[in-house]
Length: 167
Image 1 (cartoon, rainbow, N blue to C red):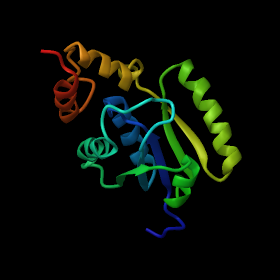
Image 2 (spheres, rainbow, N blue to C red):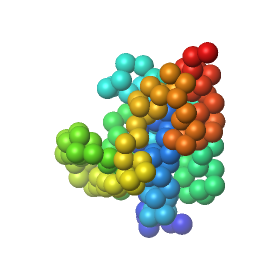
Image 3 (spheres, one colour):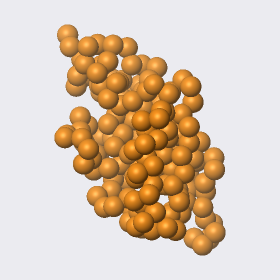
């Protein structure tokens, strides 16, 4: 497809780890846009340290989205709007679960608009099955041997059990 007519979106996040809720948003974006670039934040500012390396997080997402022919996954180290521009994206797509997400994302959308008004922020409401789901919650459950198999891809569940599970 011609670069000028291709509709490209970026789905950014730390994805530490990727959850089925994240994958639902990515899948829904892939049905709306010609190309979706999943941007994995190398080292998030709001979090002290990630459980999984950027390479591991990228591999988890690539494995879970390989059936989606228009999705690619890359780490990024820049401002989000710069990453979007580098990929020809005109949209940033993110999921919203609750009012608390809205408050934070509204602030981020306004800042991103100030940096580049040509890159639109688009929010997708989480499906009810995923409205409670967070990477932090999944990590907490896995720490205490909780069953996370229906919340994350199988490879992620195994990696969490290996890294966090208690014997």
